[in-house]
Length: 384
Ligand SMILES: *Cc1c(COP(=O)(O)O)cnc(C)c1O
Image: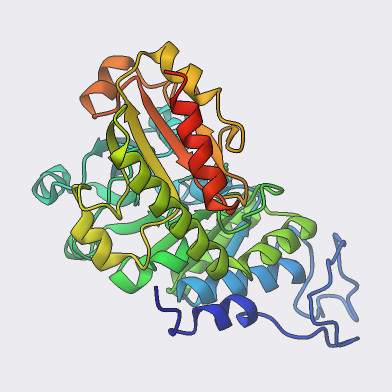
């Protein structure tokens, strides 16, 4: 868990400059829609706040610095950021994506873009031969999430980036679950990273936001063109809140991972738990890959109880420190029963086939005292 790669210093300083007018160490929250021009067309870098805003610029520089990319673009939500990638495509194009995508992304693909003539193949990308076989001449983009949700599968960033490069496919990684503290997909050869900053990046469950980081100027300009044309840009207060979060990302992520690892070890020894899914456990099918490509295995833990949907719902409702809620990545611990909450839209047969049972529980392990969390997990399972 070494921090000696300058991440902590970048988290606090990347993209940050004291305010020129006053020396304020924090960027002011520029609550303005427009900027006065000294002559028609003569601006000081800012003309209209859908296009750009100085508080947003400070956040964009910070997130770009953390992901190790040249350009950041911030959005009003993770979905607004993901949608911008879809705008790059045109009718007839084909996209390959992981088959355990965030539900909102799956919904965007299937209910919004299929009708405009885009096609999608969703597959398990732990099988690299299957990935190669899914590529067609019209395949233009790969979209992945690793770790995935809620089964926490790990996909090989380097191998997938190479496949994309060989076939001239735009490679996009949703890095929300890992955060740049744990992995930087651009360093593995991915061309673009996208985030829901609502989760770990903001980290305090008080703001909804999204971000994109890329290295290539031309790609940045295209994405910015769509962003500026469509909107979906964040307000300055939201940018300020996310920026306040990113500055402590390294400290929070370390503790999330420590607490999660302890909970995962406890669960592994619990007689009523049939399976624990945490990339840090040797029992995880991609444990070696996780160790190689991630700094820590992250703060999310899933586990299976040999229980019916109703029994699992009862357990999920019995936590006292973990709050029963969707979302993840905040300082507060959250518990989710995916079948009845976040992943309710997936037909039962399909999810069972994917290894996703009725009794699956997902934990976003927060920053409370770990002994309180351990006791809470024990007590909740005891109602079975
Ligand atoms: C939450 C989430 C999103 C969507 O982000 P919003 O900020 O809710 O729009 C996308 N991808 C992943 C992995 C998420 O967890």
